Length: 81
Image 1: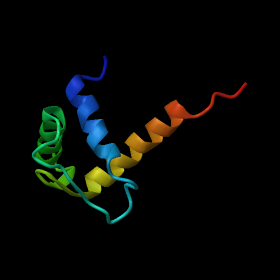
Image 2: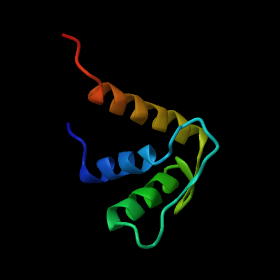
Image 3: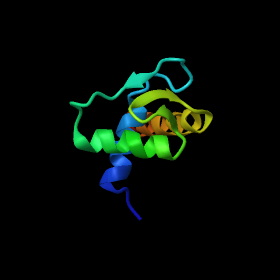
Image 4: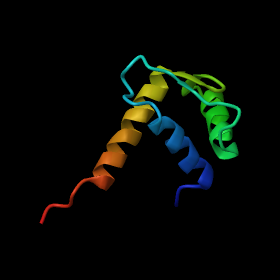
């Protein structure tokens, strides 16, 4: 099993939220890359974000973005020697 390009684009959008628990929203502009626009639409359809072009994270989105941020930091942390 591996991530699809669509999954990676969705993770990319979730990572745009600076802090999953903050009340900051995002706006995906019409000039954004097609994969980012499609990812936002898919995240909205799945109930992760409030608007088709971004908006705010839903409760499900908050939990998912927290996991995405954790995974990112774990994968990018220095390995213990």
